[in-house]
Length: 452
Image (tube, rainbow, N blue to C red):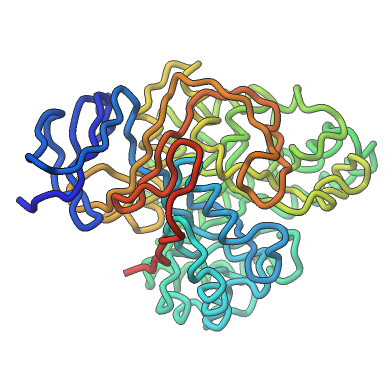
C-alpha cells in the first residue's frame, strides 16, 4: 500500500451509501489511497482530526453560470470558485450561456478556458451548447473536452444562445449519442408558455402573475417530448432544474423502461414555495418558477425514490440593478438565483426536517452529479483512487445568511436573512485545505477538467 502523506479522520465519515462511521482517509499525491479504521494511522504521518464533524465527499455542482468572459460583472471564475470552496463544493461545471461568446464553438471553448486559467479555487468542467446551426461544432467541442451539452426549448434570456426546436434536437441527439455525451435540457415547452402569455397582462409586481405565465404544463409537455426523443434516438437526456410534480410519474416510467433519462432539482425548489413569496420580491425569480408547496413536497418524495437523481444549485446571478429593475416587476427582473455557496446548507436544512441522513446528501450533491458529468472515476466519492476532495462540516450548527458576506460577486440572493443548518469547517481539494474556519487558504489551485 502507498504510504500516505496525510490522514484525515473523523468519527463520522460518509464513504459509500451507508450511515457515517469512524474512519481515517489516507491521502497520497492528492488521491485517496486507503480508507481505514479511525485509529489506523502510520507513525509520523500528519493527521487532520475532524473529531465528530461529518466528512463527506466534496460537492459536485454541475449547474453553475459563471458568465466569464463577457459578463464577468455578473459573476466570474475567481468569485464563483471562492464561493464554491466556502460552501464545500470542490468541482463545478459551467453552463455554456451568459458568457460572451457562449460555449458553442471550439474557438469559444478556448476563450472560456483562457478566461478561467489561474483563477479557480476548485476544479472546473465545462458544458458545451446546442443552438440552431452548430451541429458541426459538436464534435470539435467534444475533442476540446466538454463534458456534455446544454440546450433551451424556450428563449434563454440572452440573444447569443438561441433555443432549439425539433428540427435541431433530433440530429443533435443522434450526434451526441455517438459522442457519448448527455444533452442537458431546459425543459419548458414553447407552446405552453405561449398559451399562458395572457397572464402577463396582470400586475407584474405580483408573484402570482409571474407564476401563471410559466405553468407546470410547460415543464410536463417538455419532459414528455424529451423522453420521446430519448426513446427514438437512444441518446442520454438530462432534465435540468425540475420544479413540476406533474411529470415525475413520466420520469419514473422512463427510468423503468431503461431509457437514459435523468433529472435534477435545485435547493430553491426544495425550500421555498410560491405561497410564501412576497409580491415584488424579485430575488426569487427563476425559470421554471418556484411552485406551490405541494410541488415542493412531491420533489422531496421523488428524491427519496430516486426519480430525481440530484440536487444542484443553478447558480445564475446578475448585477443588483438587473435583479431589482422595474421596482419589483417580475416581468423586468433577471431570472436566476445566486446560491452556489449555500447548496449544502439549504438542502441539509430541509432534508433534516424530513428525516433524511447526511449520507443521502452525499448521493444527491456529490455522487450523482459526478456521474452525470462523467467524472465518477475521480470525483464525488470517498473511495480509493478518487481525488481527496472532501468537505468537513457540522450538521448541527445553525447560522444566518448575510448576503453581503457571501463570496458570490453580487450580494443578491433570496436566502438573505434565512437561518440554515450545516456549517462548513474545511474544504479539501486533492488533499489540500483550500478553505478552513471561514478563510480561504493558499492560492487558486483548481484544475480545468476535460472529458476523457
